[in-house]
Length: 341
Ligand code: KG4
Ligand code: ZN
Image (tube, rainbow, N blue to C red; front, side, top):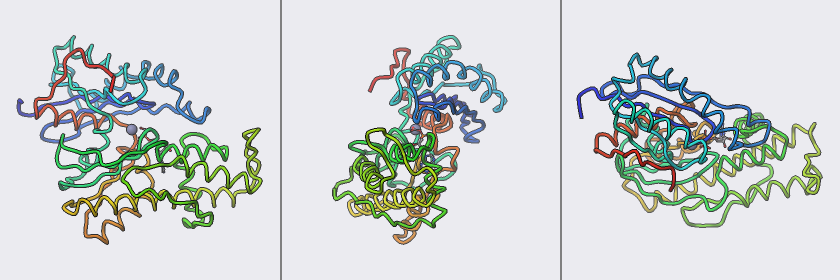
């Protein structure tokens, strides 16, 4: 690879349109992001709306990233793009755009797995030692990895049903809060200092897989038992009861904190050679969960890293970074790059 290689990264897997430029010597030199917020009216991401919005924004966001990096498209060496997993319509926008640019400008193309992007996102700001364990949690996935180097990672466990972010989103929705639910759940929980008054059941499973749908159901039936939710009308009945909302939110968050800690502890028993823990993905914005895992890591003489919030949620920077490391290894894609698993 030539000195001072420049990689353009593009991310369009869900409801964020991201682009970034990564420089061999200086690291990330620009990143631009557009976050769609019309999904809040529907309680979740609507795929058709997401892809339409991706199409409207992609060109301008890529131009922004190039402009802020003060480089032209001609100076870019390779174009990295998220090609899986994600919403098909949204992914296609980024992949087709990247392919067209690569073809028209005769650039190399690099397909990047979105989850690999999240897994390496802490490297945008930190030099995390290998090997380490990483919990990756967002609205679409929850997984635990052992990471031995760039491009060298092993899936140790993943969710068998809902994602952690989905649990926050669905419980928030039960109490009539808009999507995404994570931030409001965190705010309510903080107001009562993260107390665990409802004690929702912790999963008994002693493997490294996760499961959050039972927890979501436990919250639902707790609300029903308290006369706060009408199952048939699917209606929250205690809109004015702020105390109840705080208790539910706080108990949910503490329970998810316990689950994360329990999985990390179990994985550490099996991987005693690891040097650090990372928390990545949209859920990693949560200060309580960061604190829980940071304290646990300190107590076990391990380093802890989580990206700053702008790199926890979906972004083009993590795709440019992984793209750069794939380029170093000569892992390029051809124009048949597809979005399927
Ligand atoms: O990574 P991301 O932007 O998109 C997906 O790939 O899903 O993550 C979005 C998820 C949503 O479920 C949202 O509720 C959650 O991240 N989230 C949070 C917080 N901020 C965002 N969850 C808990 N606490 C937060 N502060
Ligand atoms: Zn994501």
